[in-house]
Length: 494
Image 1: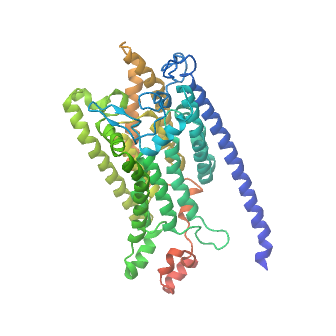
Image 2: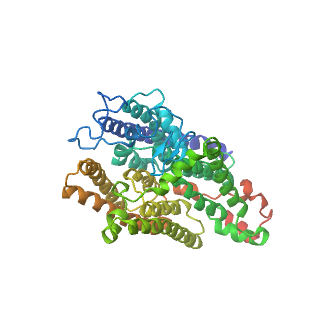
Image 3: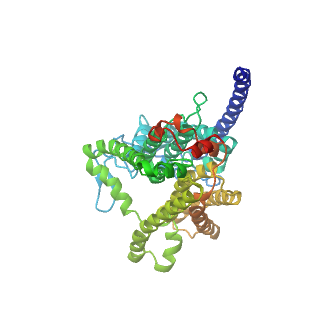
């Protein structure tokens, strides 16, 4: 009887909460619309009539040299040189020449990004039309990311929706789809872990949530590679049985070995099967073209346009000859793998201390290591790391410094390229802006490698993923002892 009396109050509170959430989502979406529209207008200035015979705008590549935000965009750049303008379906008919030039529709991106580029060019006759159609394809992913972030951390979503990176990079390259897969994986895990309002159990079993998240991460791998590295910490999270898993591992140790090796195997297997299913048609229909994209990336050198610590650091010691490129080809993958190992080790230490493997923090730390040591560090990669600033309680000085430095980098590096190409001397403020920004980012990324595994999540995401429900309501706990020890029952009821 008493439960019936409280039900209207519960419904009122739930509706009130939904109303506030709707306001947060609406404001965040409007902010996203404003920043992405600004981005579109800024980049559009590189295009427009008149056009040459290949559909390249005469305004390319500088547009208005006095504009505050440089108009350069990879979307418009890719129009020529990869048969996008001739509407050749990617990878199937092409390859790579001995000097590293791609031909026959091959683009230097994973296959799903290549397919999106092909879709953006359908019906387009100029670089400006290609840019506009590509922007229309990308925009829904930007909105989806905002909605997912707002649902997980509420007003903190504005850190994504209303800050400079979305203005600078929304339509700079094909980043929004891959970021959407990474954020979507976190959202699936959070929603699956939340408590069902009726049966008070998990909405989805841990294994089920993780398999769906792994599929999303595998799709991201086929877009821009980096989400694939998150599968390892996600599998470790399932292996250790999720939130508060240390207690469950210890309780089950005598019965079934404690750690959930089967669940972790399902996560890894789902990712592998998804990647194979996506890649296999391209491998079968055009293996040479599919392989050419990989060969292009393996041959890519750490030059000025790759914007990495190698060019702005190591080359001062070795020059840019064969020694430099040989060292980079060895040190870059070695240090990336080392950073992955450090992140996993710190995550496991955190599991020993608090009882939950911090898969989101470890994923962010691994991404920071990848961004720090890779041969290529394009400015738009800020969109990769930004969701971790939104989801986790990263210190404000770190966030502010990273974003301000990123702004300085964007405003200088895309002015550096046309001056360099013209053979003119580079102004000191451009060199200082680029090199200084690279090294500030490097220091912050190194800091994130060691701190993100122990950085807490923001609310309400933290409460959702930390929620533990009674074992009887969790399908994955069906193999737990039907009558647990008396002291365990007492602890569960307290």
